[in-house]
Image 1 (cartoon, protein in one colour):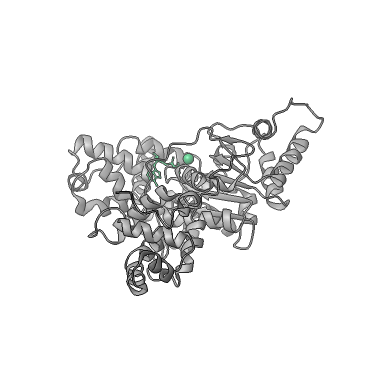
Image 2 (spheres, helix red, strand yellow):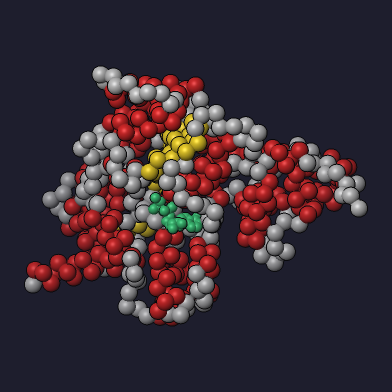
Length: 455
Ligand SMILES: Nc1ncnc2c1ncn2[C@@H]1O[C@H](COP(=O)(O)OP(=O)(O)O)[C@@H](O)[C@H]1O
Ligand SMILES: [Mg+2]
């Protein structure tokens, strides 16, 4: 028997349906784990109807059902899944009319279908993000900033391993259809801006390179011309490599100051493109220009929440009852959780409770090198503050820190603290400043070593 024609098949070409089905199914599992896995055929049909712009009553007419049945069904299913998927609280959806714009802002509209990228598509060293958990809220926010608010620069900030690169790749994948061009570049090794610009320009308008007297200026001007005439998404991953270490103000390394000019010009001149960047550290331009009503925004990325469980699941760990504790200890940092899961698998037969019972150390495998890398980049004042917090053996109030660091100017102390908070190396609570458990253990070991070498 031939299937009846799908009344809502127009949604197939205008929306990324497969991805929507799969992401909504994940949302469904999170809020209603007792329900059947995956979207049902009815749920999919209703979704397509809404995406075609039909009201629940119109959908009901097409499907020969009562309006009430469809409305009740939507309230119990899709509306709730869409809220969860787009990072909103339950029951905040006020009308069926919200569904399309919400999903569009989250990047599910297939603008790109049937339309070729006019200029360039170059993913460079972007990672494969086919395995990607959670982050719906962040994706919705970033989608809104870039697609909805047309921001010119968006920075993803946060400590190493927290998932900046993965999130940028996932986001770029979702919204690429909105752009005429997409170029991903990683600064894993610092590259002079002239090289990056040369590379971008070559991809945007292949032509013989003619050297001009003030090369950088003319390159920048040419770039902005392109960004004005086309909508481009440029991604720069790992911007921190061109920032000076041992310095908390986000200054550039010698020879890389021109990146400041790039950011300045991209933020201030009018064009229709976006530079998405990831960095462990904030840069001065972005700190100054960032604001809710500005075309420049930054998002500080925190660890994964519930979604971190999927990492442990993928490693086949056991003792689910204590997974939340483990995730909390490592602050949901996916890279660190992967490292510790490997140890738990190898040494503790996969048992999370057994690992937590040994109270010797939290720093397994490569975690030491990983923390060392981040601490080594700190200014000496920032390092001194970490030592003070460890020595205090309890949360420290600002006033106490000030007392123990009397030779330090209060303004310097505040700036250093701010920088540490931004790097997620120090945490604030009402009781005072503290360190997350792994950093606490690392710094304690450092202090031990200093004591031993002195004594
Ligand atoms: N949302 C996520 N879901 C699954 N794995 C993730 C997620 N975010 C990060 N990871 C994994 O954690 C590790 C670190 O992520 P990455 O994006 O490289 O962090 P960063 O760029 O902040 O240093 C990678 O192995 C990555 O695959
Ligand atoms: Mg990265």
